[in-house]
Image (cartoon, rainbow, N blue to C red; front, side):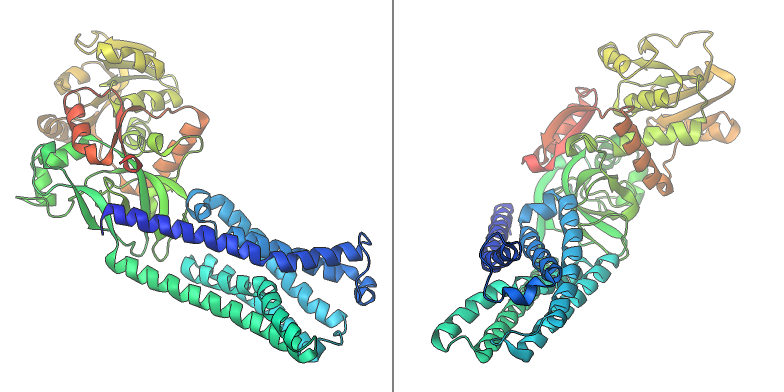
Amino acid sequence: MTHGVAIEGEQAARRSGWGAAAGLLVLTIIPSLGGLTRLASLANIVAPQADHARFAARPWVLVAHIVAGLVFATFGAVQFVPSLRRGSARVHRALGRVLVVAAIVAGFSGMAVMLAFDASPTQGPPLHAMRALSGLALVGFIARAVAAIRARDFAAHEAWMKRAYAIGVAPGVQALSLAPLIVLVGDTQLTNTLGMAAGWAISLAVAERSIHAARRDARAKTHTATMTGVVYERYGSPDEFQVANVPRPTPARGQVLVRVEASSLNALDRRMLRADPFLVRLNNGLLRPSKKKILGADVAGVVEAVGEGVTSVSVGDRVFGDASHDALGCFAEYVCVRESAVSRTPSGIDAIRAASLPLAAGTALQAVRERAALRPGQRALVYGAGGAVGGYLVQILKAYGAHVVAVCSKRSAAAVRAFGADEVLDVTEPLPKGASFDVVFGVNGYRPIREFLAVLAPTGRYVMVGGDSAQIFEALWRSALNKSVDVLTMDPKLLQTDLRELRALVESGALRPMVDAVYPLDRVADALRAIEAGEARGKVVISVSAR
């Protein structure tokens, strides 16, 4: 399946969904007009109908049934609009709650109507009983649908809602099946019973056919679905990246399948591609990449499916997250990650800006919160503040109340001041003599660690956030001998906590996403070349939807 064929198939599915919604709305017109006419008759807006006297004494039972039935039939048809589930998940869920209430009211009020009023001469007890049973079935189907959604079984929920909606839309089908019988045979108890029974049977048969088709399509997608991804089969330069058609992942228990809208590049991607440091090969294949062939740790997109046991997110939710503790894979149209690796996207930002946050801002957050133990008013030095992690460090430190001195290049100075740095120093100049900092963050420091230790307060801490292989090894042996030296290692157990705090910081205005450039998925190689050439000042984002 090529990408073009997949798009055509998706567009055809959308057209089919719109057609179904329109058809169902048309189908509700006949009973809707009948119900509205009955309401107008009871309110004396129009001339009373022939059987007006049957309902005039206790109209509210019938009014509740008609109104609830109209709401259920109309809103149920709207739920078939394709864009609701993908682009307006909250609206879809809100309408679903309305449908549940309307169905319960319609079902119980329908049974009450059958008990409160005698059958008309042309309907008789059999049809009266069938109507009562249909109300009971409607309530039962809705109860099963609610139980399924509580169990996060979305396929079963959809199936039971379709069965319930078949009962709700049956009056429109019954009108079409009953009309020819009345014309040919006459308006009798038999024709009314046969016509109405045929309407219910046809509606439920169509629902079961739709349910069966959905299950068949789901099985077919599981076995044949593919996606576009950027893969690399050998370690080396960005030239190794290739755009390829690869199998689409399926979420296992506790996993979430995300339809990727955007990702972003990190130092991790460069190190994995170039196998630098050499330790990368011990984890990902000595001679060739064997485990992680699609890079990309940051993800922002929409939940496409969830595995068994997932409770914190639902299909259609907009999420952002960090796949660095999973198998990476975000430079693709879909990615599977553990449930704790994603959280709801901060309000007010799009996928492009959300994708710039997870790994870089999460790294900065753990460095400040878990390693620095800063108190408001203490002094912090950020060496390497012009990059993504350094820029996020400045912002998060300010949010925590620190006095921030940032070290960066001249071309980054203005941006770093805008992030809130109290002082900005030129990276080409020596560190200030006599300075005393409560914490120093070395972000890809490129200076001997002894120079950072020289500007620490007696009880201060040096936190290495990143560096080359030699710096990392030096920091590791120094940390074993000196308690003031710390090497940041990310704790995956804190990932969900990090994402929630990042969301709160963004929504409060304390943290601004740093997007320097946006590249389409098929230009990941160009994006990495730009970073390696020193052209990027903030995050370089990959827009998966801009291919």
